[in-house]
Length: 112
Length: 112
Image (tube, rainbow over all chains, first blue to last red; front, side, top):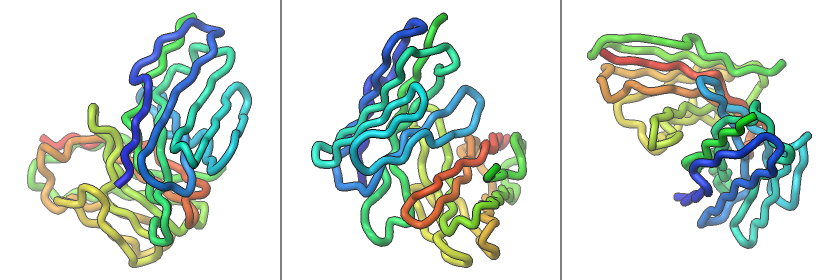
């Protein structure tokens, strides 16, 4: 079973700041999702990545499969970015069927 | 817009009742999942299905069963609801290999 460690657990920022959330996992994976959950809301997959870097607007995700580490960056943070961000590695192996393992989440609060 | 639809947003049931939670996806995804989310415990996999009539236990299957008679529909059944099953239940679906992962908006179940 994958172990997933996210840091920090809580993060408070001022609007406009650059934010980084880190994720480390202990076993082999095929890919990794970064998920976003707003208070009272559903969960959305922001990225699925298996190598390198992906960018979507102000969000950037990187992954180093060999080092078992991924980061989510938010540039020019905004109060609407306030949410829980969850790292979710995708289990490797032919019978994984897309099962995810989840980090505990990072609660991000961005103040105006 | 692709969707995973859960039949109820909020549900209150009595201890001992049989409870059905329904999930429907319109993306022709092979895989479907039921998770529960609890404060401090994060997201945990209850059951998943990788094909019609196929199911596998997740990490916490006790007290639950599932049914997948059609590709687009995955039902979670609480055989005899108990208060420790009070939780947020999230359905998700994906293509094989974890691509296109999409979550439903969740059902908050309270068992009294």
